[in-house]
Image (cartoon, rainbow, N blue to C red; front, side, top):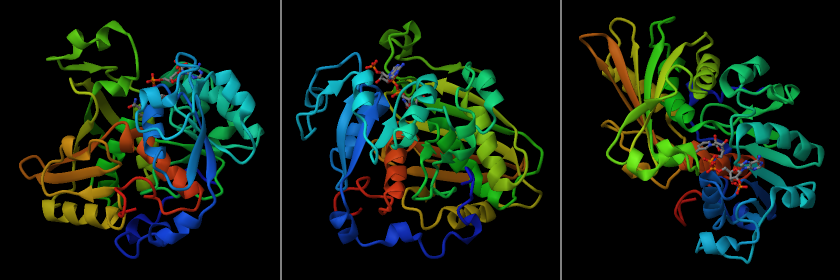
Length: 373
Ligand SMILES: NC(=O)c1ccc[n+]([C@@H]2O[C@H](COP(=O)([O-])OP(=O)(O)OC[C@H]3O[C@@H](n4cnc5c(N)ncnc54)[C@H](OP(=O)(O)O)[C@@H]3O)[C@@H](O)[C@H]2O)c1
């Protein structure tokens, strides 16, 4: 099972994938699958609970948290429909059973340790951390600061960006993409797939994220007075999503890709806007660029071309990516943009999209307003 089997990039815009066209009656009659969430007290974990509260074919049977162990989930999430309680990570692990699907929303090093043990117990795993996104084990020391404990799984893990890469229904381990990575890849992939960029020139990207992107933390620099009315760059030249984007875009373009990426923290709760700049071949026009995006992303319910630079507010609380690009003729540079919700398409929404694919369901199940799924 390849981690980067591209999903017929050039043919998109034809018939939508079969997983989108299955009738909703198939979902209603589908067997209910048990899901277990590790790291349920984090921002991504809570978002997973929120989305799955309304999912027609998945029941969350356990939600792990040490800090909130014993508390009712409904106390933190009013619309939660059952009397499920948060339970310690160790207890949830002991209660896991073959056939369940585990969603891991915890730090990468903890995921790297836990996922192999869950796979050994016969669960399938969707990991929201970066623990299984990179294929090169050595890259974990450089970008994540730990030695990978299960390097053999890096080849098996499927990179779960379903608009671009195939997520087979029999995959055991899905590496859910990073939030900045999802937006940056969406902004660049159509340009790469259509070979519109000057090869070899590095991509330059700025990503701006709301504060939930940093997780639930009491760090000084994430406190309200430090963040409000302030804007700053962080992890300059060493953001861990850099090699992930390079790896995915190299798979799309068939060539090595170099990215100069800078992350910024902005004073809002959720949302990411990525702006990318790259030289295009002489003569490439905005019209050609627009056509490339529409062809590459057409037929996918969650990725949409918009006719103006995208904004974070319209995608807030959704699994959508909105993209736009235009060529700046004076410099022959393309300026490409993508907006997502970091907790939606950047984390929990995309994880549920991948979960649907593992279950053979339409990939939008539970992710669109009732009636649209
Ligand atoms: N936030 C985002 O926008 C975003 C987007 C994409 C991907 N991600 C990735 O998703 C993962 C979760 O991010 P987050 O921002 O939701 O995190 P978070 O808000 O910081 O919460 C972390 C969660 O992990 C649990 N946890 C911490 N250490 C653990 C350990 N050693 N073993 C098991 N569980 C542990 C915590 O449980 P306790 O209750 O016990 O503290 C908590 O539930 C991270 O890998 C992150 O990189 C986040």
